[in-house]
Image (cartoon, rainbow over all chains, first blue to last red):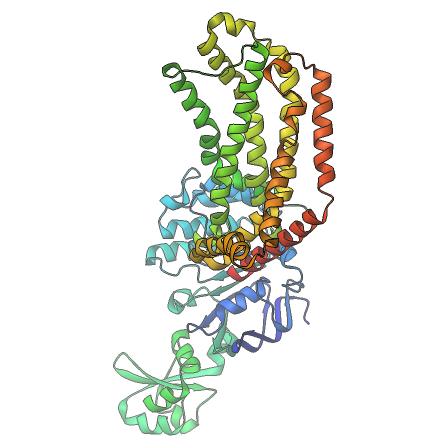
Length: 292
Length: 292
């Protein structure tokens, strides 16, 4: 185990009866990273996140902040910030009541910081949660957990169902007020395009397995996307790209590694987007083959 | 690790304070409002007995209202956080499941009934004054020896307060098993509890002559009732006798009555009840863990 990693998972497996939610997952998250956890519905994202905060027991070796999550759940939850879902704040509560409760339940919670963060939003301390929009509730939740002096934040689909302005405000607050180069964030989302610019690393899950765990810098060096016209299509297909997709009226072929030289010269190298990579690595291989 | 129970009790207060205050304050307020338009019958002639009986009756009525209110709320409380989706928020905080459940039980089954006793004692003087004024006029009111009423009412009130704690020990298995049924069976719980009650208390004894469960339940309810006030007639069996009771006798009665009921807890009946209560508590914790 590497002590500098905030999350260290080795061969982690989680099952619900006969269904395997996580299958031999091995990932690590060092400090100062913003890691996107991507996967289709049912890929195992939420299961992994719940395992990380000790809500689900796993087989294998899992350490978060040096602790075993299920054995040290209460201690772990004092050391990290966690948003399990969007709009799960108790609807009966007023914002100032939640600040008071967090102050008493979370030893590393700063009331002053929570109040300062709330001032960035349009939410008042006297507001009742049930009177707030879904976006405002999400921002309130972020303000509350960002006021915990933690090293790690885990966000499970925190902006699901929010409009674009709410999502943007949420991520702005996250980057401005939380990420300082020392703290790390693990964020699962389906809105890949929106978070791509924030991420330093990405973990892609596919049917409980890690399809890819890589930094965004390494994506550029490892994966090659060639934009080409129709005349080069057969040659590209013969080189077995991971994925072929249409982009601005032309076709782009995505390769894992450097394509053969004669193929590389047929297209113009472009930066592969995270969405394309995600599609290439996680969609049904049979479908991929058929469409190529 | 520090206990989160005080903070979780604060949460209960924040969530339920309005209902609790209404439950305790509204009945005596309504009574005082309608009293001038009604009539009073059967008030004892002795001023001391008149004052004391109304104070004690106020305590018992408010305790009954608090107990009924708790009885109606407890099945819902077992599912409260799951129903409003806030369970994931509470599970993201360092408080343990046992602490959360214990705080809910403490607040609703112990602290609110105790508050009803204390509040009833306080407001009882106002109610007693109003009733005596209504039935015997200003002269009668002036004749009540309020100091002596207090000297007798305080030990009786403290005996009832201890009785609330003891009664809770007797009722714990029923409370926790009903809550567990509600948590696990959700909307089917009412039907399940009704079916169990009909089978164990009517069908089994009448059709099969099997009375063990019914007798066990009878003993639990009788134990709870006696725990509250075992032998009030030993303090004074009639209003006339009440006039001759002094403070020392009242304290002696309260201590002996409580001691007898404390001794009654050392029985296999109570032990079997506590074992069932532990099972109910475990089932509730298990369901709370699954809900996360």
